[in-house]
Every structure is written in C-alpha cells, then in structure tokens.
Image (cartoon, rainbow, N blue to C red):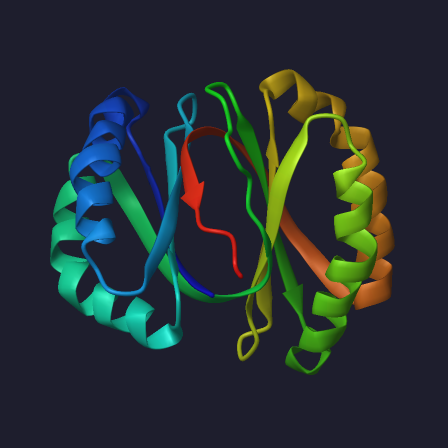
Length: 204
C-alpha cells in the first residue's frame, strides 16, 4: 500500500473545528476516491499539531486522489494551519490497529537512512522491531512508511490509551536503540499524538 501524509501546525484554539471538518467532509471525500484503503487522524491539542495519513491500494490511486483533492484539502485545513507539509510514502510494513476505543494514542518516530539501506531497514523492522513491540502491554498496531529515494522513514505505533503509551517509553527506547544500530538509521524526532480516527483496511 501507499500513504500520503499531511502535517500541519497552527493555533491550538482552532484545532478542534478543523479536526471535525476532516473527520466528516474530509473522510467522505477520501472514501469516494478509487483505491482508498483508510485514514488516520492525529492531534496534539496542547502544541497545535495535526497529522493526517490517507492509505491507498497503489501508487496510481494515491497520485490521482492528490490531484483531485489537493485544493479542497488545503481549504479544509486553512482555518488552522500556519505551516503545512505533505509527503508520499510506501507502506513497507503495515500492521494497522483493529477496533481502537476512544482514548487511544500514537507515537511517531522519524528516521533517516542511506537509500541503499532501505531493504535493511524493512528487514530489521519486520524481524526485530515488530515482534518486540507486539509484546508491549497496550500495543495495538504499527506501520513503517518509507521514501526509498530520499532516505526517509516514519514509524507509527498505536497504544490503547495514554497510560499504555507512557508506560511503553522505556521499552520502546531500548527497541529503537537496537534497531538503529542494526539498520544504520538516524532518529530525527519522536512525537506523540491523540488518536482521533484510525481506520485502515489490513493488507490481504
């Protein structure tokens, strides 16, 4: 699968209205597009951050949807967004959550690597990171998104609630340190978000 992410920052006081617009009209517009497989919506209400990820069956569907929805997407987030960054990814590993209850949380880790090491990163994540994350209490799902050409990646991990997310930090740090060494990657940032919406069809 393939993913398009939109990351916006702005006035925290304006975040709730935009979140509602994306959850309703934005979600409807996405669902009307061929090849649509799901969407995730994440917020940091204190700092004023918004992350949206839309999932697509193939690269062509992702590109076509972007061309159709780019203008309306900008209009939806404009009341909130002071800065906007849009990126496209390959979903190299996807184990999305099922049946998340309200109150779930999400950790996003941004990575950089040499493009020649892309397959090494995927192998390390699948064989080392994923099994160890699955052992953490409250862990609910994860994904590895990569941009092979630019040498960038993100790891997203879902937890059932904020308490489970907080309790996982030490163990997740140990996994991250080991995987960083094995896969020859650099961790650029770690962020944590409240999950507003997470509905992705599992790959067959």
